[in-house]
Each structure stands twice: as structure tokens, then as C-alpha cells.
Image (cartoon, rainbow, N blue to C red; front, side, top):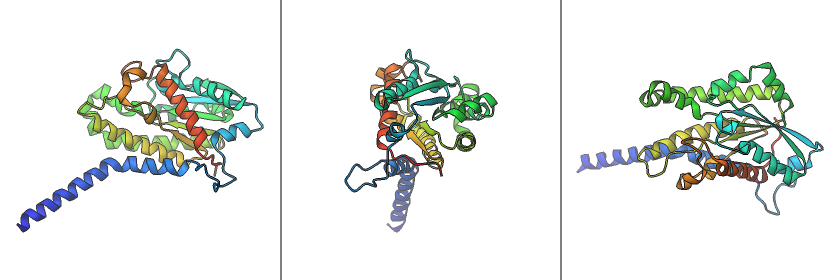
Length: 274
């Protein structure tokens, strides 16, 4: 009886530990999200403004919007300029200001590729003059290994790739801040393209939560910055409505990303550079 009790207790600890390992990243992401949202009440700090207020109240009449990253940043699958052009259109309507887009997204870009791109003098000049810098990066880091060496190698290399992505993203933000300490950095969450009924869906959710937690924690230390909760906008339950191919959104998908970006600007408190 005592032995059975001990075994049961060990199994319980294993279950609790596994659940914590699986759900912890999403728990941390939710904490960071909640901490950055402005509470609309009479008691809120009068000095607190949203990112949308920041653009509205700025003496500038024209803003430069630079886009960096991969094929989603580039807008593949869109006939209307991707999410960034849609964000600009919405911002112009809401602020009566002009937003000029410069899209330097590169299909297939990895975090290392973006870091290399940011070391090019011409790209650094674009960074220096930008008021908003939107970034979509990270999805190709594991995909590239899976394509070149197979999915088993990608799984075996997971911890190494994750560590590399974390360091690359930190270096990307530091390099951007070196050339432009004040631009609003807008980093997109990665989203899931695996339908929820698939057996391996939980594994992909775990991977994406790990990646997205890195994004939130990195952005938090490089203000002013926000992370757009793209995975909230692109749910797999209606994936056929917003997916262009096996990976990229169509224009409805990019509309959703743009709307979520605007909502993030409207609800999150603007924080100046430290």
C-alpha cells in the first residue's frame, strides 16, 4: 500500500510538472500582456497615453514606417500590400497623419538573416529615419532546418535553435536601438497553421508559445515597443478563411493582423525609451 501511494504521488508530480512546462510560456505571455494594457477607469494615471495617442499628439505630420523580416513581413499572399500597408491606411484614418511605408521584408529570412541585413549601411539608414519599425521573424528558423535536414533533425536541434533565436532577437533589437532609440518597435507574434484536430497540434502550440514568450520578453526590455497578438487574430478554427497557402495569410488574414495591430496601439500604454 505504501509503495502504491509513493508511485501515485510521483505520477502526480510528473503530471503537474509536465503541465507547468507546457502552460508556463502562455501564462507568462498573459502576465506581460495584462501589465501593458491601459485600464480605462477614472483612477488611471493621467500621464498615461496609448501608442495611438502618441501618434495623434505628435507635432509630426508624416511618419516613416519600416518593415523588416520574412515573407509575412513582405506580404506574400496579399494583393493589397500585406498587413503593413493596411496598418498605415488605418493609422492615417485614425490620426489624420501621413504614414509612408518602406518594406524591406525578405522571403525566407531567418533571425540570423535579419541580423545580417541590419549590418548593411543602407538598411541602417532606413532604421535611423523610421518612426515605426514592424518586424515579423522567427518562423523560418526551425523550418529551414526541417527543409534541409528533415523534421527529426529539427526536433533534435530545438533547444539549440531556440537559444540562437533568443540571442539573435536580442541582438536585432540592440542594433536597431543603437541607430534609433525612439522608434516604436512592433513585433508580430508567430501564429499556428496546424489545425487543432491534428495529433501534433499541441506540440506546435508549445513551440510557438516558447518562441512568442521570447518575443514578449525581448520587446519588454527595448521600449517603446509592442508585440501584436497575431495568434489571437489567426485562430485555426477558421483557418480556411484566412490562409493563402500552407503558411501565408491571404488578404483577410492580413486584415486581421492589421486590425489587431491597431487594437494594440489603442489599448497599450506608450513607454518612452529608457
